[in-house]
Image 1: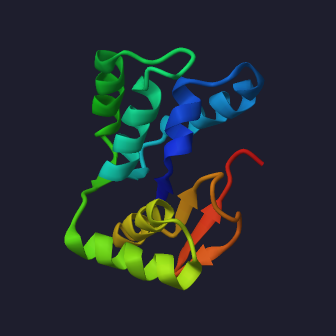
Image 2: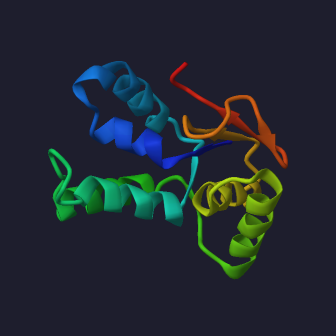
Length: 135
């Protein structure tokens, strides 16, 4: 069961003119039934798409509706053990805390793949392998 990073959600909803292929791929991914997300991913999505400095910000009710649709997937909730696991991953792999928290959430859910373009494709972080679906 793959874990989906925030950038997949963002491309599916707000592609730039030069990112049409990524948008199509992201939408295809989100049509699957076997995905896992985390509360953090949903929060990051909301903050990014609704920020007023965005060229075409998404309205609150539109973003909330999308999040509601994605609640059909397995969702990893925030917790103290998850935060502590993220801190260990951050130290071990020298990633940002936010990337480490996503890796920790994926591991907590038992996911062996993290679909993302933000980390090193092919690299495994304690059993979670990064797959860039856009290459």
